[in-house]
Length: 338
Image (cartoon, rainbow, N blue to C red; front, top):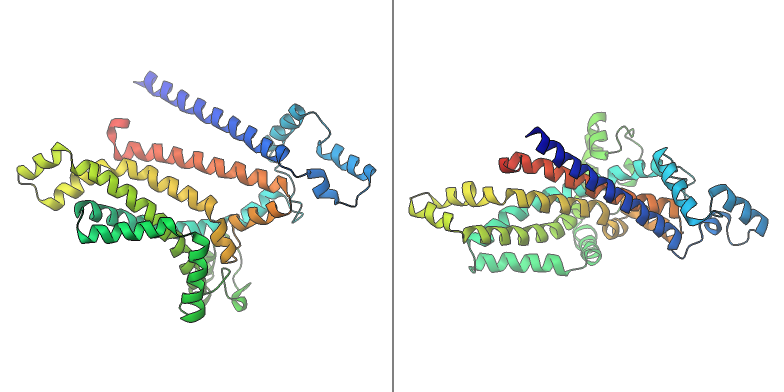
């Protein structure tokens, strides 16, 4: 048994290493094959040839591609992700500064998406082809079909400009900015630690609309997948057998059918969360949300390839981490995989 576990661990570690190497090659190619000259982005269009060559030599842009790749990997292993051309700060410091805002947004959104999507998917499957099923499917179709930037703008017009029910752009109103010390970077946590409930309430007010719109988009996907998984289980013979033996409908649904789709739902929710972390670009732009999505967008516009490459690498690492987390949760929900 120990040998089998060691072999499985070795295969998993090997897969992770191959994935990371492929990810490194991909990010390097993005930085070198994009139609952006990293040297020209640093020195500007008006720099003379001598300045251009000096900077190219300093950052290694004059080396053969394979040497540039080894230098890139070496720098990463030493924790050097480069300096952002746009901000003048180390890229890793920039990301650590903006990432909490996106994590806060994505976490609230996945709570909305999974908290509503899973029950609605189960309800739609149980009430298949009934009016409630048609309504749920219609709502999920809208969630899939509407561009999220359009939904965000409509949400701002209706709920902020017209009804004044939620905050506008940004994480805080202007007069609350700077009142709470940045301890963790997570505004809700920092305001609670400071005991400033006015700032906390304002932060929640600004978070509600963008997170709900992201959560609705995520809910549409999770609902459809949950419905599909549940329909497959409800058509199995063991469900019919359980009902014939006198087991209640609710117990059959929740203790048997739902129990058999939990492992699948773990993957769906984990991937949806990863997509929210790296795919909140449009909603962050619409709401002027100072997070990871807006950071990578701004840097792409100015050709800041150090920042773009690091962001792409980080997205890949996030998905690898979420897959590992899913594997760990598999073993909790399904003892057969241990």
